[in-house]
Length: 167
Image (cartoon, rainbow, N blue to C red):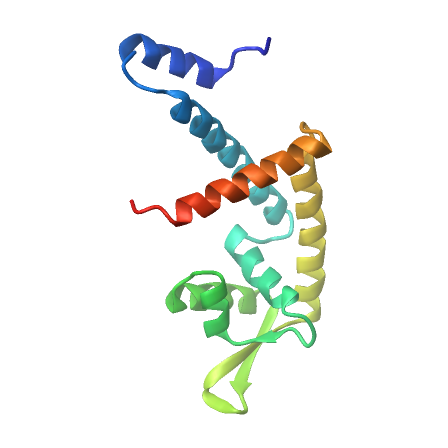
């Protein structure tokens, strides 16, 4: 039998107060929420060691994943990261000031800019990604390989169902 945790205590209180409710979904999603908070804190700590915020890492990682020559347009980044153009401009400004990206006019469309990683940006995103991957492995280390695959399958199914749900 497993040891009781904070979620069990809260659910037991709710069962006492509202025995008419099915609290299983609340119990499951409370654990998902608690894990997400732990996960996000660990991400923040990893990226901070590289002088980055989570959103800045996302931008550098998107440019890095684009492949050589690691050049993208801001509107493509905004779309990929589901961020407003103003929000993207703010992130690009911070990354530019830090010397992690360069922005130059697009020679084919002078109304647009091209964004590219600097050598410093490439080194930073690669180091941050190495630490990020190790951190994520550590977060999942409490599960066997089989359990990790089961979790991935279950989360995929849950995300697909949630995308198709009207709220």
